[in-house]
Image (tube, rainbow, N blue to C red; front, top):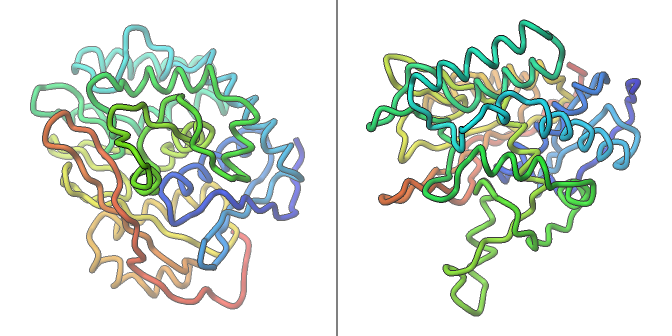
Length: 323
């Protein structure tokens, strides 16, 4: 593809909802791998929706995403590593897995294998271990029990299609698919709270195209091990109660610029650190910083997001400059 500079709105990707934000990052990464020069920004409105450059139409975006998905389904070492249903591996297996991802990149240093490396570094870090000695996954790992993260990702890679992606980008979200969901939709509890019957015994239905794109978006949120503890970009350290924070910006930003915004240390340092950095955020085109609590069950370790709030808000700069 060649670069297209016309703006394309994606009205179903709500930046105030974590899954919408992460899915927009996933779209950005897909377009980047397709050889265009995409940018992403957010509409400063009651519902901050995503706006892209890099594709002329929704049809173009859907085609790029679906072609990208085919590579992940057939050639990814992250998803293809044998006998790994989840990322919570024992240290020896984790090391072998990391070497396999690295060796694939060294053998073929293209955009696809680089994407594999980046996604791996967003899922788990060597040296950060949970209480039972297995690897500690990203703070955004919400699955447990029979929900096995990598198996769910593989099923999505095999099953999602263009219609799933079109619904994810343009809406309305119908919540009618039994395909796996990673639990990143902050509206999920509210959708099911309106049921006339108890939904606890039923399989939760979701928006699989959005879950797939959000999974790819995790690559913008790498993790690291420091003194045996896992640090996730945008999250505070505590595993059970750490909030997740992310900025919304009005200035069209390249993938590199987006990674720089998300890597700002203030996001993981606490609400007061974000407020102190308000001037810096304003200068970088950020009009809001969102915060959402992470909730985990005492038994089983299942995670979910609470209701998002605006931690920081101010008007965007009047002059818009491309990154």
